[in-house]
Amino acid sequence: MKVHAVFNRDGGTFRTMDMKLFAETAKEIFEKHGHTFESEIVAGKHIVKALKSVASEAGEHVLMAGGGDGTISAAADVAWKAKVPLAVLPAGTMNLFARALKIPLELNVALESLASGTIQAVDISTANEESFVHQFSIGFQPRMIKLRNTLEYRSRWGKRLASIRAFAKAMGNPPRFIVRMVIDGAPAERTVSAISISNNPYGQGMLPVPDAVDRGELGVYIAGRLTPAALMKLAFTVLTGSWRRNPDVDEILAKEVELHFPHLRRGAKATIDGELIPLPKDVKITIHAGELQVLVPPDLLSK
Image 1 (cartoon, rainbow, N blue to C red):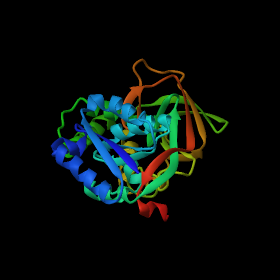
Image 2 (spheres, rainbow, N blue to C red; image 1 turned 90 degrees about the vertical axis):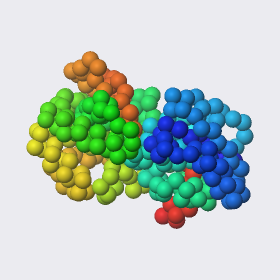
Image 3 (tube, rainbow, N blue to C red; image 1 turned 180 degrees about the horizontal axis):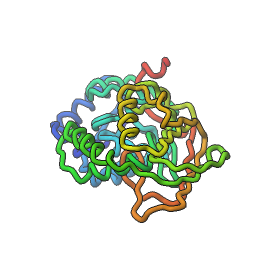
C-alpha cells in the first residue's frame, strides 16, 4: 500500500510537536508493515490545496490527513470526490470521525493501528453541495461556536474552556426559529431551538459519535422551543448520556431531509463538522451510503 500523508502543522496536537520527527516516525511504522510512505507538513491555510494535490496523483494510493476535525472533514470531501481512500490521523480536540472509525487517539498507536488495517466503505453525507462526515447543525450550536470564536485560546484545553464559556453565554437566550421539514417525504413544520443531522445516528455514549459508520441512515435530532432551564437540562442529559430520555429532543432516522426557513435572518449560520458556514434558505441533506473509502484498524473489521 502506498500512503501519502498531509499533516496540518497548525492543527491541535501538532502545534506543539516536532513535526519532522513525527513524520519520520510515521514513515518507519508504515515501512515496517511493508508499505511505502511519504508526507508533507503544511500550514492550515494551505491544507486543502495540498490535499487536492495528493488526491490527484496517478496510481493507487491512500490519502492520509492529520489534524483536527476541520482538516479531516476537508480531507474526506477531497478523497470522496477524487475516489481515493482516506486515512484519518486524529490530532484535534474532539476527533469525532476518528472516534467513529475506532481509531486510537494516541498518535503513534493510531499509526500502528492504521498500518495494519485495511480499506472499508463507509458513508458520507451532503448538505446541498457541502459534504460532511459527522454533523450538520443549525440553531444553538452555530451560535455557541460563533461566540467561542470571539474568545482567545491556544491549546485544546483552552478551546474546551472557551466552549464552556460560550455555552454559558449563549444559554441565556436560546434561539427559536420556524423550520419546514420534509423527512423521507413526510412534511412537518416546527418552531425549534436546534436541529442536528448526523452522518449515521449517534450511539449510546456521552459523545455524539455513531456506533457504526456504514448504516446508510441520517440521524435527525430536533430540540423544540428551549428555555434557558430546558437548555441546561439538555446539556446535563448529554453529559450523562441520557439525552434520549429527554422529552425536548426528538430522534428520527432518515435517508433524506429537506429544510426550509421561511424567516431566515441575514447572516444566519449553520455548522458542518464544527465549521461555520452561511445558512441557505433551503437545504437538502442526503446520505451517500458506502461512497467513502477509509483505512480502518483491524479490530473494526471484526465487528
